[in-house]
Length: 68
Image 1 (tube, one colour):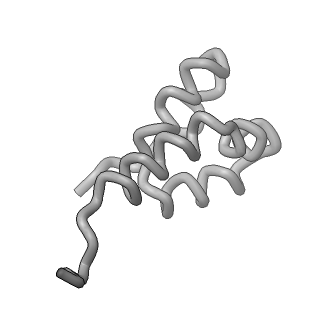
Image 2: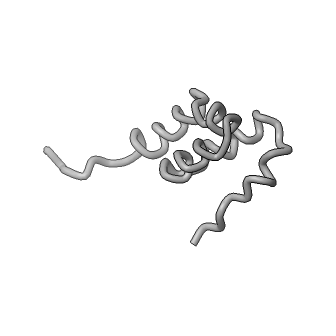
């Protein structure tokens, strides 16, 4: 089981580093973190975060149904 993210440890990190971390979160965790503060809400809306999430969780997955 994954350890919970300690919000306090992220507070002192620069935005660029936090965004790199956010790119590795699953959609549910990312959504929860967005609600933690205005800063995280803004960072969670970063285009690069959602681009990475889309690429990892949507584009790279094989379809559930084989239509072939």
